[in-house]
Structures are given as structure tokens and as C-alpha cells.
Amino acid sequence: MKGLYSVSLALFSALTLVGCNNSQNTPEPTDSTDARQDVVADGSAEVLRVATEGAYAPFNYTNADGTLGGFDVDIANAICADMQVTCQISAQDWDGIIPGLKAGKYDAIVAAMSVTPERAEQVSFTEPYFSNALVFLAKKDSDFDPSDSADINTTAIAAQRSTISSQWLEEAYPTANIKLYDTLSNAFLDLGSGRVDAMISDKLPALEWLGSPAGSQYELKGNEIDINDNFAIAVRTNDPLQARISQSLATLKANGTYDAISQRHFAVPQADNSMTTDTSSSTN
Image 1 (cartoon, rainbow, N blue to C red):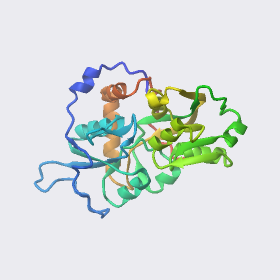
Image 2 (cartoon, rainbow, N blue to C red):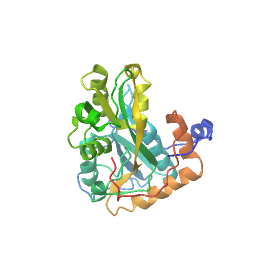
Image 3 (cartoon, helix red, strand yellow):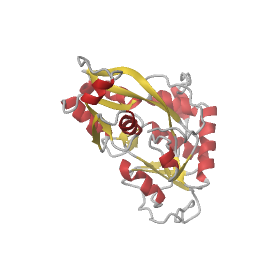
């Protein structure tokens, strides 16, 4: 995970980012995979169309006014600034986010997406920009022990559908009582209301929820699970954007911008990221 963030937030505040439109202001995309227009009609600005989920705090979320925020959004804006292009960022449902990329609705996905062999068959990934771990949550007074396979197999456990956490749980414990949800927020809602007894999640979204009033009576259970899970940015297969975005990510890490953005969004230090894409391991 990323190292301790010693860079001042002033660096981030001083960073000049190109304008970013939310989903309500994004021009209607085409459906052709060959229809991407790098330069707008007047030839004055290159545009990068980015998709995120908008429902995965602290990585990406939708503000009360409908605008998008979070670590992914700031990383996307910083990449656009380094590439000297204009960002157009829109929110997309998680289950359709890769099909939308392949259909040409946008040019890149910046949405806490784990690199997996299955996804790498459909899209190309940049160098990773975040290393992730999985955690279990349950009520503070719960006896749930994830180190005991009997507990996992007999407990109703929530997870978001089509994510690394649900995939890992399904593969590691095929007889587990897993309740799948379209969004992470709905999974947290059922955990908080007692409709499930435990939950598995990426670490930082779990910590974000535990710090909220709804999660105040809950805690992490057991040790975090390291499955060599790396988040990367997805583009269409063989798109030259893969190399351009990877180069921008390297620049942001080298000049301190990445650390400043991380410090802005994450309350805990992150381990160093290897910056090596590994599509051979099973991740979220």
C-alpha cells in the first residue's frame, strides 16, 4: 500500500486541474468503439471521457448537489491536468461499466477497479494506482470469527455483486450464505439494519462506513485479507491511452501529487504500491 503521506495538502490545493463535468453535464456519448474523438470540433481542446461508479466512498461518490467526488475523481482530474486534456467524468452503474467502455460511451474507467484475469480479457489496464485489502465487519458484540470457517458458512454475509470481495468469498467458501447487493451502500444498509449478520468489503470503504453514525456499533473482525489486489484504470484493448495514462500516473507519484490526493481522502496511511500490473492472480 502507498507509503506515509508527508506531502502537504497545500500541494494539492495548488494543483490546477482541468474542468470536470458531472454525469448531468456530460455530452451524450456515441455507441461506436471507433467513435472516440480526442479533439473537440473546434480543435481547441482534447477531451478524456471517464466513467466512475459514484457510489463507492471514499474512492468515488455522488455529492448532494449531484457532482462527483472522491479519490478516483481527483486522480482522474490530475491525470487530465498532466495530459493537458479536459476531463468529462460521468457516473455509471457498476454492472454495466465495462460494457459501456467497450461500446465507446467513454474512454477510461477510474472506479477502484481491481485487475483480474477475467477483466483483462475484455479491457486493457494501466499500471496500478492503489493496493487493496479485504476485511470482514460485524457488530461489536457479535461473536462472528472469520478465522473459523464454520462461522463463515453459517452466517448471513453481505457483499457487493461482481466485486473482488464477493468473488473471493464465493471461491474460498462455496457453501457460505452470501447476500449479494447491486451497490455497496445497499449492503451496508442491510448490515446496519440487522438483515445480515456480517459483511465483507474493501478495507477503506469499510473504514469510511465504520466512521459514520450508521456504523458506530460495528467493527472489523479478524485480520485483513491480502489477496494481491491492485486497482488500475481500464481502457479499451490496445488503446494508446493505456501508455499515456500510465505515464501520467508515474508523473503524479514522482512529483508528490498522488500523495497529496491520498492524504486528502484517506485517514490512514497506505502501503506502497508496486506499480506492477499482475493479471495472473484472482482479485476483486
